[in-house]
Length: 378
Ligand SMILES: Cc1ncc(COP(=O)(O)O)c(C=O)c1O
Image (cartoon, rainbow, N blue to C red; front, side, top):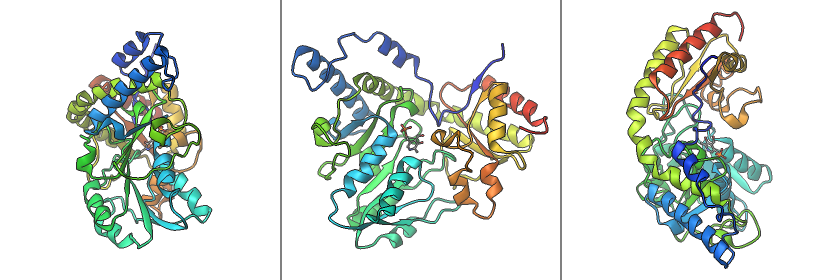
């Protein structure tokens, strides 16, 4: 049987074996509603609070400021709608055109309904938006700035500390989607100096179904889900305690992920060189980027056909955000980078790496690419 190689860690990391083992060994008693006052409920509550503490510790935050959610998308939606719902009338939001749909879509929806006006900072493939461009975009009615830390498709890193200084001076809350940065770059929410920070468990070796929004103490946040007063009134609904436990354990393993980054960068650079020898052109990543991804253009080869053919061959990669796969739309990130060159967006694919990736996997991946590219199509 052929070896399968998984290089789609930006979509989801494999569940860490220690997380899997801990879930398997979980006492059956952790099923009760953590809001219940009886012993079963208190037991769930204890596990939930332990998980919150673990997530908080991984980002140097107080546990009380961590709102547990069902994932990155919910955390992003909560940050945006939760801040803007408190506004008495239409207001202004600053964002970028290369945000993940979890950020771009809730903003577009509010814009379409006339609840907000939006400035999307201009982007280029060579560098992230300059802090000065953000300063120039702020208006007296700006009520939120929503920007990613690390781009999901290219790995580019936005200079959040510089943005934060500008937002703080202007009194505008800064929401940072750190879903792809957490576990790849050291994260201390206070050093980052943002007001809201979104995270997801399945990008750091946890299971899907858990995420978090860190909220600066004192910032008013409205719950988007309406119902009970869970999560200190910021997220209604009975939480998924088992997923939160997995997230907590995965958070304790983040230091190991961080230590692996230089090794991963070397593997990525080597793979990129070998793909270039097969005719690929690495897409620019706005200067600095994380270790875990390369996004390459194969001129004349449709990305969706390549991804499908490589999957059959044994290599799991993607043509952009996982939530957009299945749609054959060109990558919005690359479209924004290269508006005059739509083929680039249609012909680019993403290889993304994690702690589990080794040299042999990369070698096999290159072999599979060679086989597929030697065919005329796909
Ligand atoms: C940058 C970014 N933000 C948000 C999300 C959404 O997270 P989730 O899949 O946990 O809903 C993702 C997922 O790929 C992401 O990459």
